[in-house]
Image (cartoon, rainbow, N blue to C red; front, side, top):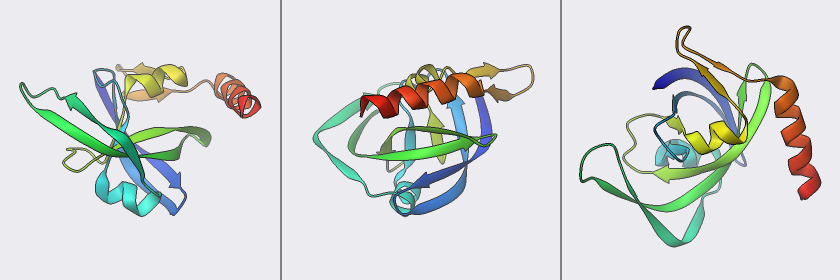
Length: 130
């Protein structure tokens, strides 16, 4: 199941409003190479990742990642995004990110639910670990 919503993304190079596809069938969060390069400094993976896509027999090689903050209803969330050259969407928010931030998808209303108190608590705990 998927929901598509506009979000503001921020990285080390700037910010941009992009349409994000919340896809419970995708494991990782991904962003197109074009927008990733505009928003953040890309980090090369020591060993490239090879991931299968929903298209039967299609495998993509990922060589870079980037860290981005994104905002839903003024709540700041953050994660690592795999950078893909031929991504059909601007951004895909995958299951790992949704689980990390305990995001809920409301398919009846085509919306994403973020509990601000949970997001704040998670962010505080992440800061304490660093």
